[in-house]
Image (cartoon, rainbow, N blue to C red; front, side, top):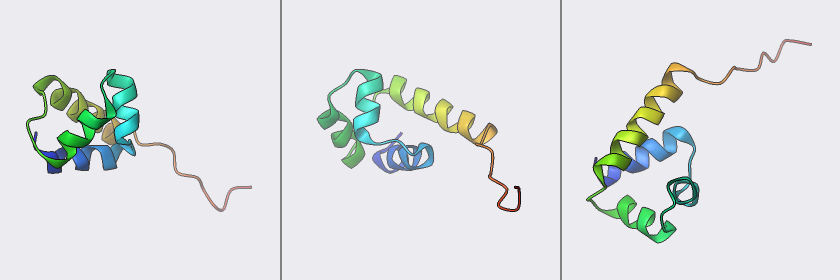
Length: 68
């Protein structure tokens, strides 16, 4: 995974660098460095890609604006 793909994944998930730092128990500065350049650890890359795939398979329900 390169820095551009990392940013795409975070955008797709609606996640911030701060949130990723919290859930991965890493320093937010490290996440921000990954967002600017590689290398991104393989375990993080695989995990993020799996989160994006899961989000794509199970999108949130869309509100029906015509429903009462």
